[in-house]
Image (cartoon, rainbow, N blue to C red; front, side, top):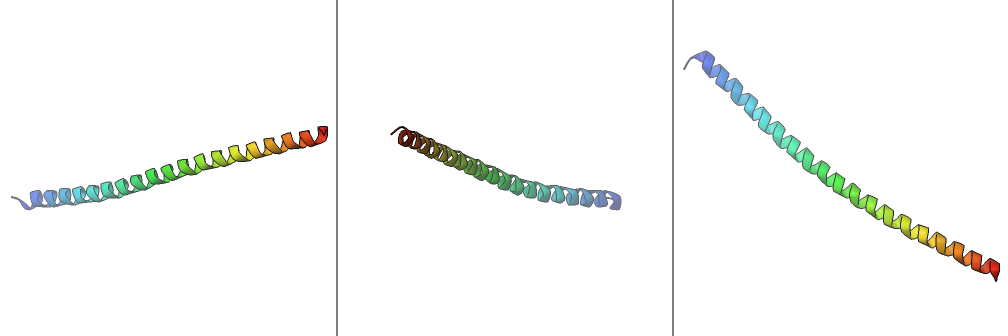
Amino acid sequence: MSTENQSNIEALESKVEELLALSKKLSAENAELKQQLQDTKGDRAHLFEQREQVRNQVESMITRLKTIETA
């Protein structure tokens, strides 16, 4: 095998190793982003629940105030 071929093979091996490392890094980042998305969706759902509870409380207060006004 010629020196040029050997150099080409080594360069190719180096590029493959770089691509594997990049692939692992991107895979880890992707998993982290998916987890962040799930966390955000959970937070959003919790905020919607809280908003509904507050709205119900406010509506209840308004109803009680109207009842007091008419009494």
